[in-house]
Length: 239
Image 1 (tube, rainbow, N blue to C red):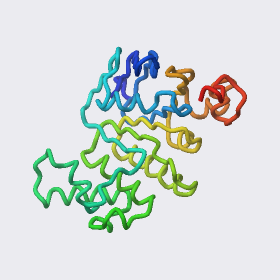
Image 2 (image 1 turned 30 degrees about the vertical axis):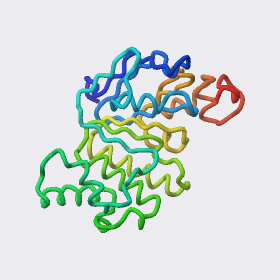
Image 3 (image 1 turned 120 degrees about the vertical axis):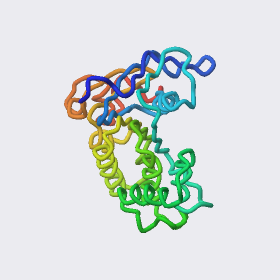
Image 4 (image 1 turned 90 degrees about the vertical axis):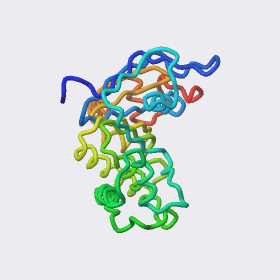
């Protein structure tokens, strides 16, 4: 692991009115690392992603990015059904002023990474849910980003397709050596794909470590989250 992080989140605070969403969140992510940002719904995970990619401004604290090349995989595939798979990816290449031949070469390479090269000119409406998700992966990496943000990448998928998507996440991480953040509450996703996890609750980090440490830990927060138990400090009435 490189000694200098690609991304640093430093003491981030964010509130919407009187509701405190983030309360002093800090973590680093390194090249080639997949960091799992986990926790119950409403704990601030997606807000952190929006701040990292510039969609929201923090009230205080800062995000230090050593690259502006960011790929974002949305919770939904967020494809434009009026465009072909090829043209959905081409939108992300607009600023580079490439020729059609250059664009096609890059797009075909990225689609090949997710085994969709044969669907280059297909309509997103003709793709399965898993194929749409893989297309969104290809779009996110079309510019070879140094930072990849995944927002609930396996939500709504059956267990088999979730495993397929998780496998592609692992492959892309190795291919690109990017610093990746995976926002999820899916047990299989954070245990299979991440090198390290940060557990959030009520806008704060309450535990962090490797997935293996999380499974074995007696810490009440990660123990409850990993087991899915109603018993523990994350009371169901607060979630």
